[in-house]
Length: 238
Image (cartoon, rainbow, N blue to C red; front, side, top):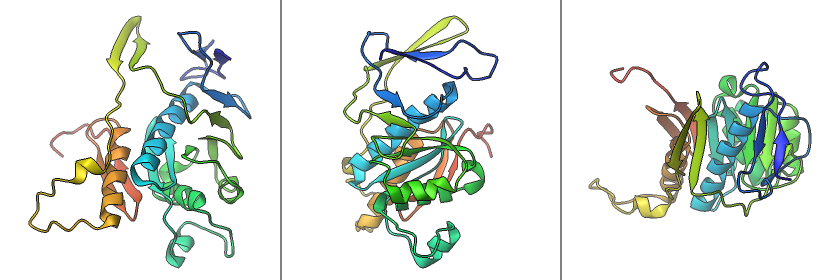
């Protein structure tokens, strides 16, 4: 399928709206449930890029919680402590897979901002993750498969040039394909050259998350989980 009609554009009055492939190829996604809108797909595509890169960089399952085309939280699938399970409202005895832990961490980073989020998973949405998602208020989820709303082809490679029209003017730029991985962490500039594995995971999580925020952003990370992503601070002084 080359084209998909959307529920509406950025606002309900902006109709018709659609996504399509200019080169005539098939879309890399299949809608399994519902009728997503324009911003839903912007959240879906941006969030999936983030988790795909995070999985490639760390080797761990990754998840993101997106709102308004920016990450409210992102995380990798490290185990949850008993205290974290209480903080993130995990039911006693609930099954926790690495994928479920990743999304629980991503969603729990800022539960207020994540309300009504779009979820993204690097791997198949398994039953454990779906069970946790069922209790949350979310617009949708994008993943390579499983209990899902939008299913994406994990082998899809986008065109190197991106275009967007605003006010009748076409913007064009090279896709942000900068690869963030362990090679960026080789030059340790402090006197202490010891960089533990957990610190490497945190740094990669922060750098990749910031790649998908807007300008003037700050990111705090702990245990492979963003615990605060500040995007779009208007004052360059404060």
